[in-house]
Each structure stands twice: as structure tokens, then as C-alpha cells.
Image (cartoon, rainbow, N blue to C red):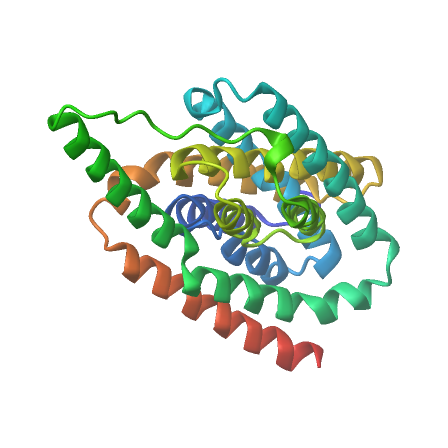
Length: 276
């Protein structure tokens, strides 16, 4: 028994973390697995959400470290996005902790449904397909002896005003709950036509990572983290993210996405019935 948890419960949280890391890599929805798992262990909603944020923070850091090549030459945008994410994460964390816990309990089903719908719409898949078509066109141009230089990420000063509102909103949402935030950020950056897919895919990670780090600091300082659960979740997420690539190559993306959407809808209904 550790801090109120049995060894079996901690192992179940570890397994949930493995599942969250796997799903996070596959379809970008780790919280659809980890958050309800913590609820099932008897952790109150706000504490479960805060512990979940701390538990999955390593996923984003690893993603940023692995995207150094894509982020090269974008120092200013990197600094700005991390800063926005950091400030938004603090704002979202304080909203979670300062508002009546009932507010989050009532919002959680809607937020989970929202993240499930984002996955169902699949903007990420559409962007990947569009980028693949652009890459094929560039290769054909090279073969024909034409100019095939990749379009760079546009300067910050050319961004539309609504892009900044979208980025700030994603940052605050990441600190408050965060499920589906990465896909939402990707959709905003793609709609703004800032740059090619692989570069904006790396950029969107910065927003969520900055938000998760600062939100985690707020949660830790405020004592809103269940450490045994957060640590086991973090270890599980690392394992899940590590083993996911070779496994996901054998499973159709549509199958994994459909499973995540169905699970999200079922969870939404279950939480709604218990809450409303």
C-alpha cells in the first residue's frame, strides 16, 4: 500500500499510462485514456486532471527534442510559442484550481466529447495527405529539373490576428484540460498556412509543452498532485510512447482513430450520467 493505493492499483495506473502513451503517439489523445483511469482509481476530478498533466508532461518534452531538425531556423517563433504556452498554461491551471471544482466536473464531459470530435474530424490526417501530395509534386519537379525548394515557415509579422487568438486559446485549454489540444493547435496553424506540415507539426508541440510544464509547476506548488499516480503514469506513458511506433505500423490508422473516438463518446456518456 502506497499513499492510499494498493500495489495492484499502481500497476493498473502504470498500464493505463502505457495505453495513454500508445494512444498519444497513434492519434494524439493520451488524456482520453489516462484521465478516466485516474478517475476510476477514486481520484477526484480536479486532482486527477492535475496529476494527469504532470504525468504526461514528459511526452511533449521528448517530442520537442525529437523535432530539432524541423524547428531549425525558427528561433523567434519557437521562443514566442513556448512563452505563449507557458503563460497560457499558468492561466489554465489557475482556472482549474480557483474555480469551484463543480465547474470542471460539469465541463469535463463536454471537453472529452470536444476532443473526440477533433479526432473524428482528423485534421492531422488531412494535413498529412496534403503534405504527401506536395512532396510528390516536389519530387516530380526535381525529376523534371525544376525548382523544388520547400516553402519555409512564414515570418511572425505575416501571421493574421486570429492566429494569435487561436494559439493563446489552445495554450489556456492545455493548462486547463488539454485533451486534443495538439490536434487543435495543428488545425489553427494549418488554417493560417504558416508552413509545411512537418514544420507546423513540430511547432504545435511547443505550445502544449510550454503549457504543460508551467501548469505542472502550478499544480505541484499548490499541492494538487497525487504523486504515486503521477509517477506511475509518467513511467507508463514513456513505455507506451516507446513501443508504439513498431506496433502502429501494423494497425490501420482509421481503426485506431475510430477506437479512440468510440472510447471518448462512451466516456462522455458515462461521466455525463454521473455528473448531470
